[in-house]
Image 1: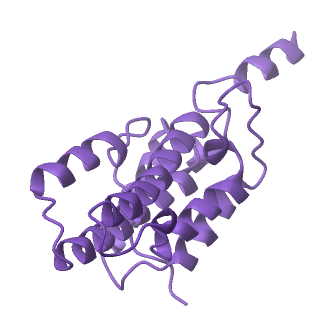
Image 2: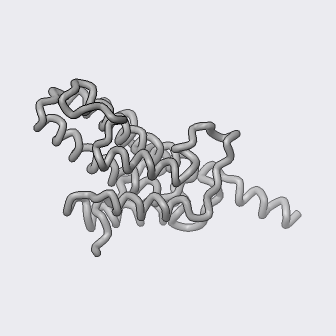
Length: 182
C-alpha cells in the first residue's frame, strides 16, 4: 500500500517534482512571483545566460523519442546548436542581403523559444520557464536588430509570437527574466 501511495504521489501532471519545482503549488507560485518582483528586466540577455539555464533545466531530465521526436525538444546539445545559429545570425547560409535572411535567423530563435515552452509544459521545471522568458527577451533583441536592418516586422508579428510560445500556462505565474548576476 505504501508503495502505491508513493507511486501516486510521484505521478502528478507536473512531472512529480518536489517543492518549488512543482508548478501548481502555492510555494512554486510564490517563488516565481518573488523572482519576478525582484527582477523583471536588466542587462541584455546573452547566449551564455541561455546556455546555463537550459543546461540546468536538463539536469536529471531524459525525454524519450516516444514522447516527442523533435530532437531540439529533447536533446540539449541539439537545442544549443539551434541557439548558436540564432545567436550567430547564421540563417542557414542565406546572405544578409537576401529577404529571407532575418526570417531564417528569427526562425532559429523561435525554435529555441518553442522548445523551452514545450519543455516547461512537459517537465514543469522552473528552469525551462526562466529559459523561455530569457529567450523572449533575447528574440526581441534579434527582432529589433532585424527591424533596424530594414525588415518590416510589426507589432502584430511580435504579439503573435508572444502569444504562441512566450505565454506560459502550467504555473500561470510570472517568473524572473533577468539573467543571474555574474
